Image 1 (tube, helix red, strand yellow):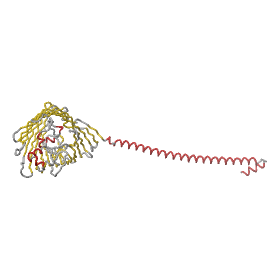
Image 2 (image 1 turned 45 degrees about the vertical axis):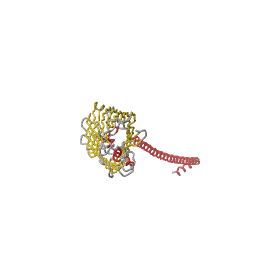
Image 3 (image 1 turned 180 degrees about the horizontal axis):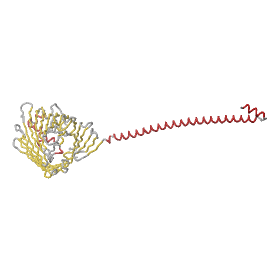
Length: 466
């Protein structure tokens, strides 16, 4: 077709030169256009590559942003969790009423610390026959008690210090392992399980001071190990072995003190193991006078104490046994270190508390059997009867006691001793925590030659216990 067109143009005399030039120019432009299209395609390809790269970077940044956000959320959650588990979040502070103490404890009940304070300010007038009348203001007791549990609810501890005489002195320091309250070991320094009056806390005495019976026969604090327990709802027991030389003493021989006590509570309450001098809690946590309105509370108890081969030249328990040894052996034998004897004591007591009336009494017998011949073996006895009646329930109480001690007169020295003590109490907190007490004691000593020595003691005491 091209050739035909070209032949026609030649036949008609048409010049092909311009046409050739136009064709050549058109081809050049086509090449340029193609080149530009290629450039456009290349630019689009490059741009697309850059766009894809930018998109990938954006996606990476988005992923990193999400990762960072998760880390921030995790850190925030961790801080919140740490705040929940912080020790100060798990600690509770409690103070319910006077005498219950200021308590710090953890919510899981594995740790607790209770702090209590006792202060007693006393004024007394002591008129003893053939002696000067003594008028005395004194800080009778100033004590701090810390107790609680550590690591487990059943690992119990108690520490008591006093500043009665101006300096600090240790009174109690013991541990209870009360995992099974039927058999609960205790080690340390504490009141030995023996007599009712001594085991009554000094914070809860019905009269200003304990009786002369406790001074003569009771055992106070000592260092040793014991087993306590609560059996059902009726029986509490304690038995232990101790140095035999009293509070803060150091044993210098192998003659130890062995004691045991059983308390029977026949009715009317719930018995629990509670840390204390004789660990009885629940409704049977006996104080000398306060009782419930709806039911009487009764307790009957007995205790024994044995010290084989006691030599008061080496050790002396917390009572007046050393005075009896002087009467048996004489001071020369004691000073020579030869005053040695087996000592046996037995006590029994009963308590009744019922609303505005209370009554308790105890009996003691002590037998001293000297080693070797030539010395008497005395058997001494004594009893106490103590009672109270509230004139105003839980506020004003009149109380009194009678005590008699009969000394075996096979040896010289004391023959008998008795005490009559009436008292008046004002319980401002309707408990023993805040109270004002008044008492008067008439005490008569009679020796084996029938000489009598009378003593009149008036006491008043203000107590704060919180």
